[in-house]
Length: 221
Ligand SMILES: Nc1ncnc2c1ncn2[C@@H]1O[C@H](COP(=O)(O)OP(=O)(O)OP(=O)(O)O)[C@@H](O)[C@H]1O
Ligand SMILES: [Mg+2]
Image 1: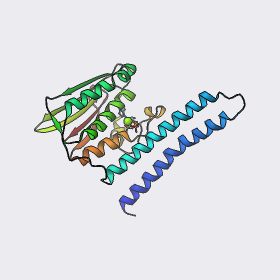
Image 2: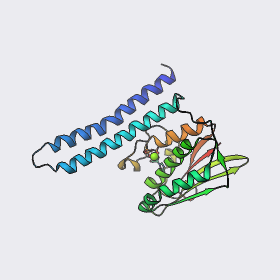
Image 3: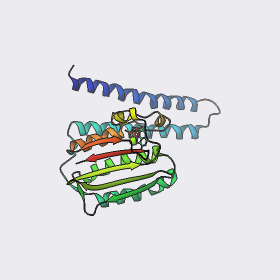
Image 4: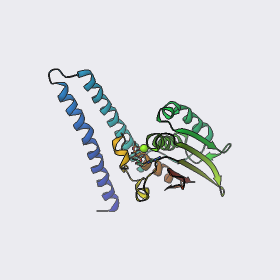
């Protein structure tokens, strides 16, 4: 088997595995709803949430495979980062307040990134979403875009709980989720998508443990 085939087989196995769990839960919920005296409304609502999460998983998987087959064009374009990130900050304001995480955008005036707006939004959304879910209360998350040595650099840094040293290289793997993350919803595809988009646009990305604690994701274009 070529390494590409191996990758594809592993990917298919992971997707089927990921789908089995919500499907089993939906089945159990529906079976319980059929029992006499069951709280049908509550059970149906839970089943609906499972379906929603499953749909998100399918969307992410489809998006990633479109990126990989080149059907979804990643590069070809350039976007002024400021307005896109400001709009995102506005959109997550309520969620950030609920998570008790401060979200800051520090964007150099007029700086452009070599991504179409949709792709920049995809990358930034995944990074902010992770900070809100995992950094923990009272953390500060900063998304900055600035020029370093002539190249645009996108940096997402938070001072939250972070990850252990040995988890760092695994964060960008598909379906990888940290131990602490397992209790929350998610599929482990977010950072795989981030990496794919950045790489396809000619950039590189790495995860770092900052001295101050927390997590830093740094992309150089
Ligand atoms: N800011 C962060 N602080 C601490 N851990 C993080 C942070 N961002 C990511 N992680 C860890 O990296 C793992 C992988 O992140 P990724 O975004 O790929 O997947 P996910 O958030 O678990 O699921 P999805 O993004 O598909 O909903 C997370 O499960 C979490 O353990
Ligand atoms: Mg994520």
